[in-house]
Length: 194
Image (cartoon, rainbow, N blue to C red; front, side, top):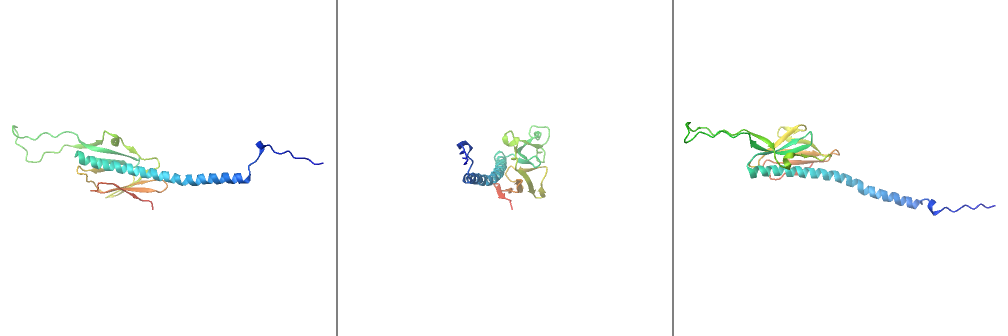
């Protein structure tokens, strides 16, 4: 007696080996294209942060020259924040005695009013926070490297400043440095990844 096996329905049909290989190849191809781009996305965020900070530094320098008022960029290395401040007088000095006054005119130069730096009343004064994947990797100044706390870079009314090197870093080791020269008009961005 011969037993006939029923033919499988189309709904119960299994995948062939060729179909499984094709699916695995397609998944591998998509992963091969997507994974390297994830690293590029992080690198792009680092570059964007470096460009934004460089633009804010250049803007602070330009504003100090145009307005004749000292500006400074404050960097909070612990909180990954930075903002721009400008110098405002706290009180005006008393006018010197002169003609029509009971006192003789002073022979010394007038005293300069005390001044203080306050945040600018615009977006640059409210501050910027670095992207969550980007941190300050340190700031190099004349006296050494600072890695924690707050520091500021002041721009005189003629645009001059002290030399400073600000490093922005990512957890994967990628790093960019912003180099601010005392008389240069532009901030240079240098790749620090070894």
